[in-house]
Length: 409
Image 1 (cartoon, rainbow, N blue to C red):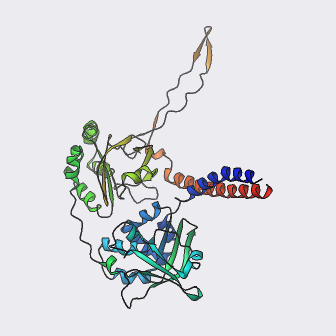
Image 2 (spheres, rainbow, N blue to C red):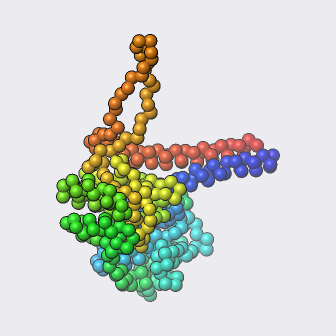
Image 3 (cartoon, rainbow, N blue to C red):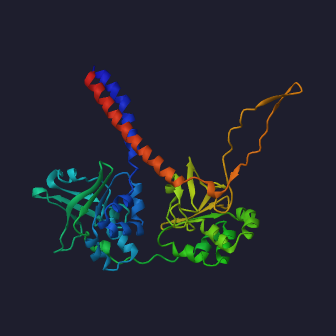
């Protein structure tokens, strides 16, 4: 009987672990905090400092959120964006602490590494957060370099919990740390076009320099996070006849189409299948000038529905800017006809004509105008939601089956 139980556990545990692992990447901190308007300032600065994307890509994380009233004192100090990133990094713990775990700490106290510590930005152990469970359920959070006389932040309530994956809890105040609040020297200026010149994207760099306001738009987005996909020189040369026939406004739009206002490393692109907005994207109900990032094994491609470009090499990759060379000039469906995938050939319809069988031929158009395209973003959101629900159902079913089998045997 013991042998049977061991076999059952061997069979069901991999299924259970896989199902649970598929649910781990489903959280979106921006959307979670958007449900609580009193945390709008905190939510805004998580996005501005690019910490939101760091939270979303991690499997196990705890966010110590502070409301607008607590954030106002921090904002009033007029820290640079990089210093603000250090301070808020202290509020992101690289371990899971739900409300139940906080009130069941062994020895009533523990040290947890924050993102400030984990990324190597904190000197020594100043990026650790001391969590203490006092009597009567009173929990406090303090930094290792908390100044004398300063008060620790206290636990207020839980906002959202996905057990052992993500916990978002409210604390009473911003964590105080002289090291995190220390001035951070600004990064040296980056010359975008010079980087392109050196790595086979000279022709595209020349187009940026020659088109009014385009280079400025690219440069203005670097500090907030920017990914550029620059076509190699041969791809630009092949596209130039079409480019010259575009209006000035469309020339501007198609160049901006090659910039994504979010920093993506190569590793992030390889793990990110989905639609991205670009510098040319408008603010309508349905986003325009988007394309899908696709990856297969080590190959990353960008599909616009008109053409598909493949990343050939990394030109530059240092947060907040990444540049990748691609083998085609990206063509948006807003300017060119999107090409449908070939449909299966219909079964031939035979006719009798003079004793011989002939097949009817048809002449279907293999392209459609942008106006007839469906809402891919809405479909993608629905599909993602469906996958999350399916994963939780699979995990629950695996638990039930394993439990029943153990009881029976």
